[in-house]
Image (cartoon, rainbow, N blue to C red; front, side):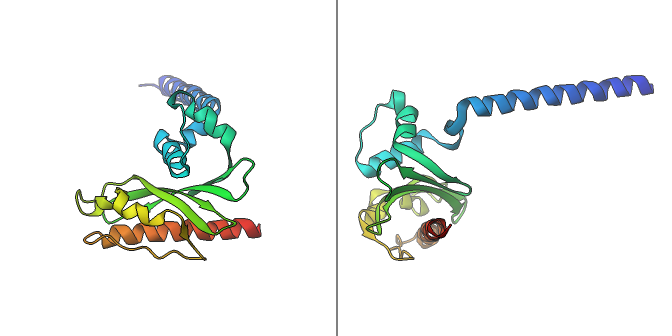
Length: 180
């Protein structure tokens, strides 16, 4: 192989990389906030709030109802025309894998309106019970101060404590957002 063919291959790879980067960037811009959201996240938020939605226009409806405040490790949305209603999505370590939690609060009343575990891969029948009504029902209209204490599921203490840690992490982010 001569030097010229090596440089031709390198140029080809650079051009191909550049084209792919442009394509991915354009796709990301075109889909916008949808890349940040899953159907399950939106469904969970609306379910907690008792709002029925049309699945065909769920993204459009959500973008009218909520505005994104923070999109870091903790995603925070504020309900349009109801400044006190905030929706959160936060993920972190469970017993065996990552757990993702969505919850909605009324920040003026200092009340958690509800919570749903949207993703988990904990032990079936044990740690996975944090995604069941029996566990997350305790969060319906739960008052909170700066920290939340969770009633753990028997046999799923680590998973339950992970949900508690995620909640408290997100609530502390809410407090720091108010100070900013």
